[in-house]
Amino acid sequence: MKILMISGSRNPEGSTARMADALLRGAEGAGATVERVFLPSLSIERCRQCDSAGWGTCRSEGSCVIVDDLAGLVQRMREADGIVFANPVYFGDLSESLRAFLDRLRRILRHESAREGLEGKPVVGICVAGGGGGGAPNCCLSLERVLSTCGFGVLDLVPVRRQNLDLKAEVLEATGRWLVGQIQSPPQ
Image (tube, rainbow, N blue to C red; front, side, top):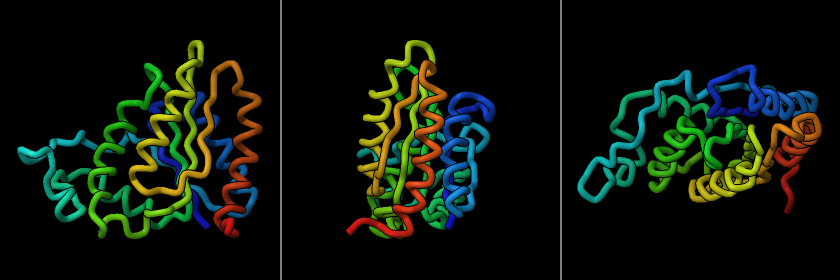
């Protein structure tokens, strides 16, 4: 079993990475292999809204005309058994890199052929806020909206504040074990 973690954080040593690592530790402890992807290190452009209606081959073919790392990452998502989206909260919302990725992903997933291997795939989201931490719940809501639109099976969204990092690390490690169990024996 493989869990793919996609992070919108530029810092592989920061709070978002620490929280994602806690979840992945739990998943590894339950027998999964894990892979980490940091979106800012990839080349993923923002959507161009190709035609006058704001669409293009994303809607008609389930693919994007932009040649960058999107297609390869989508393939890695198909190969994973579960996906974790980890996001540093900026301005109470998704990071720019995660937003750009998800904006394009949800467009290609409007086409039935592109949903193959992704529709219903179990996902967990983590939103980590610094500062006062008040933006984490709003960010979780935003992430859930996009992931649901994409057709993923959203199992959990975990808001984290810098004030509760130690507690949430424990929660996320347990969540990683739980995620593996949900994938191995989905509820009926």
